[in-house]
Length: 201
Image (cartoon, rainbow, N blue to C red; front, side):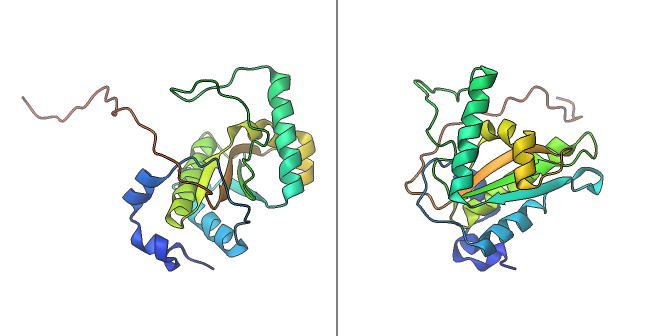
């Protein structure tokens, strides 16, 4: 198995560097991520914390371009059918849906959750963050494509992807080699509602 530490990029990057340098990448080169690299990303994902050691995650990897195109079309149709507004990022103006919700990335990794308890969603999102930070450490870009979750949860797509009916798609993540540098976006300072130290003033 390809370990994360085996790449020169990963060896030179600390966990803190990966956190601060991770970006939501929406522009990719026309290259498919190597199977060994995808396996290493999945291995990083399952190192995430998990409540009661349930490890409720399961993964679907899609690297077939025709399947990605059809899934993108299904995701856009599902969005239009629901007629719900988009949650736009802070400061965005004139946002329009892309023709391909996967931004032409050649690899989609979907984290599904098994119905094992009240912390399944949290566990799956922790695994997603591990995967994305590992991708950054390996010189790859990634982006969560929440628009695809509803389509991935449909009976039709679950049947095609051989996903059991009881599972839920939490984190569809595209991964690939960025075609351009993605600039950093600002973050608000942490909003601390309370900080009790137990020390007298």
